[in-house]
Length: 289
Image 1 (tube, helix red, strand yellow):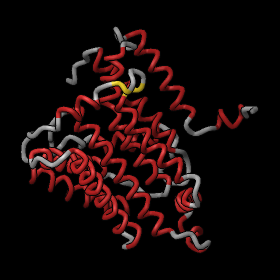
Image 2: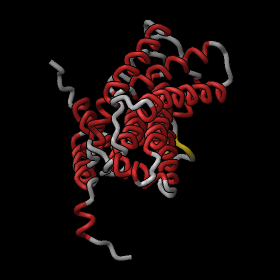
Image 3: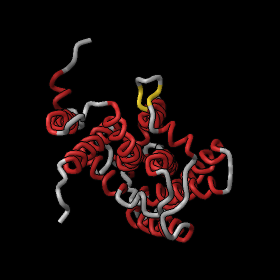
Image 4: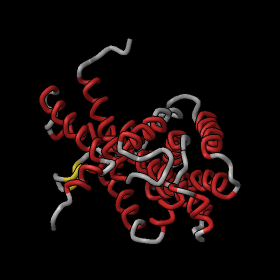
């Protein structure tokens, strides 16, 4: 199969891929032991949540929307996770309830925006405040624990080859790849490019928007399950920085904020790039003041 070099160069995600490679090499040469297995695992364990949230954010932005509530969804789901563990529920039940809660929060966003026609930025700002407030009400100070066996599994290698944290992002990406083989692909991109033209062309714009926010909720829920294993506890502000970082990752990955341009792969590259930059800063022990 012949690769069209001109299309490859014009690929929106190409700049972020190049930056990922450059900063990966910088880490290799400037960070002692960066390629050691435990360092790689630690890097992935800490940064896979951002990759997951970025993929959910990408889905929304491509469809012409915006979601700044994903960080709050991560925080609230994290709080629910530790509360369920304290109640003694089995791990499968904990995970199922957490994902359902995240899907419900995504559904609320989608209904408000896709069916009630409220501006995405305004709607998700309001729901972000509500979700963060509920999380803080449920857990005013960092507390609680996550099941130790689950944390141990998360911070390990599958068959000694595949880092377990990667599975969280891989699941979201696989699900999105399957969705992109359905008519939903054309609905999402056409809604993002021009919502009115898509509507008069019989595209279910409202339902498409609802779907994208539900998908983003699922991605945020998965990110919360990952970050809970990384921190091994509950914190009502654990996802506070993820919303803005995810939007930045999408922009770096070549996804147009106006919608209809870019791909989820770009958001992954953007998130990895940001993570590599933060890792360099952390390894260099640069003071914040």
